[in-house]
Length: 236
Image (cartoon, rainbow, N blue to C red; front, side, top):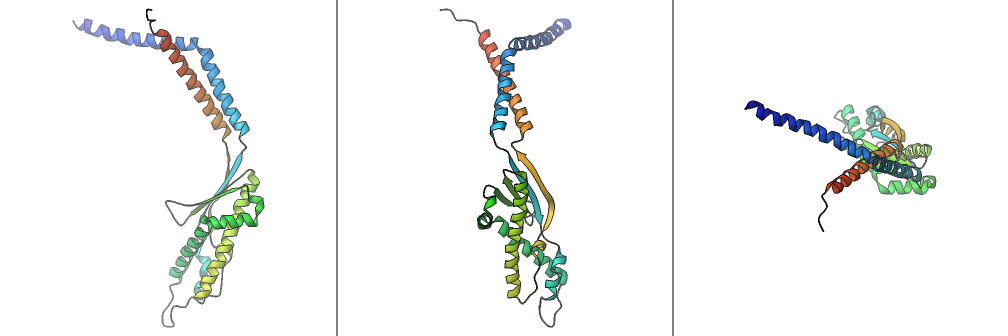
């Protein structure tokens, strides 16, 4: 009795293996369709890569400046004649506050518009600034241009432009509270990561994606042909 129960399971497993092998054979019989569609996917991807002009995106991350840059300013801060100044606390607050001002300048569309107006050679570039979601005191600045050198140069120039505007604003605020000393625009921030450049479109990735898509499309078409070809014809 037990032998009768086991034998169908083995037979079913054997049939599955045979069916899979037969399926592969039937797909191989339609290799012309599969290969043709795979080449079509590759050609489409190659055409897209060839016709799409490359763009270069340069990116850097800016962080709050070092508190040592605010040492001369802290000495001029007057709380009262009978109290001492928490030098470290004041320096930390100044560092945080100046980064807030600088971030606003970087993120403001008016800053980007004024920068392009003053430097029309970068009119074809796209400037994007975003605050770090995990740390709002850090800002990521990206510039995309048609040339790698131009993207790096525009990134550097835009940061310098925004820092100069921030330095003027910060100095005016310090003058309002009786602090006459100021710091350099380059000391208003620190560079957390050096500028890096990536090019789009990514040729190898797009070509690989085209081959994969074309191959899958070819297999799907072959399977559909097998299903339609395997249906019994209806009597007239």
